[in-house]
Amino acid sequence: MTTNNQSPAPVNSDSFGDEDEISLLDLLLVISENIKLLILAPIFVGLAALGWTTYFMTPVFTATSSVIPPAAAGSGGGTAAAILGQLGGLGGLVGGALPAQGKHMAYLNSDLLRDEIIQKFDLQKRWKHKYITQTRQALKTGVIIKDDKKSGLITLEFTDEDPKFAAEVVNSYVAVLSRLLGEAAIEDARLRREFLEKQITEATRKSYQSPQVRDAVIQGLVREFETTRLAEQQPNPNIVQVDIAKAPELKSGPKRALISAITALATGFALLLFVFIRQAMRNAGQDPESADKLNRIRRAFGLRPKLKS
Image (cartoon, rainbow, N blue to C red; front, top):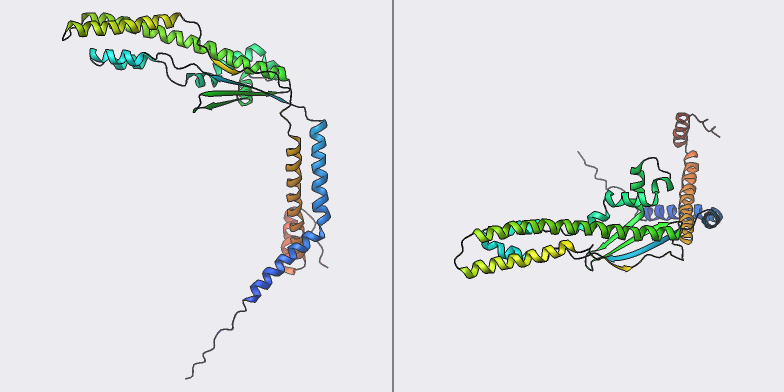
């Protein structure tokens, strides 16, 4: 029995390169045959978009203000906590009575503040909203708040067709924030004062190792009490408004050149995809099997099948 060992026919590696070359040439051929469409149409659409933004889109203006919020109240709380630590774990209670950090951002992002702005400018009527929740959402989206935690600077931006109105909204945000923080600071000071009053009474009744320790603790609490009492009588904390919002002279939008360029590029990409698909359909129509599949697809969509040549 003889075994016929036949080696497989060698594969010509150049055939793959030829196929790639043919495919690339086919693509270049499709592009060259539609070069006028691919160049002129995006230019025309881009110019049309430029004209539309120029004559039909209303210019808008962005007002900006930068503020530095007041430092968190109760800086003496650390001293009070250290003194009350000698009273047996009471120091933590003072720390718990201190106002939380970042309260200004909580107010800026609250419906409490937004509702005051909405009521002041009658925004629900101005923006023709049926529900106030729509107006709140529009104001939340429209007012951009940037909190730079490194520098502590807060920037507020608002964009509107009326530059004067845009500035008024931003400045009103700062004014309402200042009042809300002032009210909160006074309430925090009142709570700390009441708490310290109770601790002074407790300190006078507690026994100590020596009269000197007792006097030091009570005197420290009294100093904290006086500081807190004065803070309770202070006016609203000063928010440093670095830049007061003014009616901007230059419009911030629409960005006509950018819109025109993006429109032209999108049109060019869509047309390029279109001419490739159209050429692929033509090539498929020349193959009997592919042509039959295309006709079945046409029938599925209720279209008349293409007659075979």
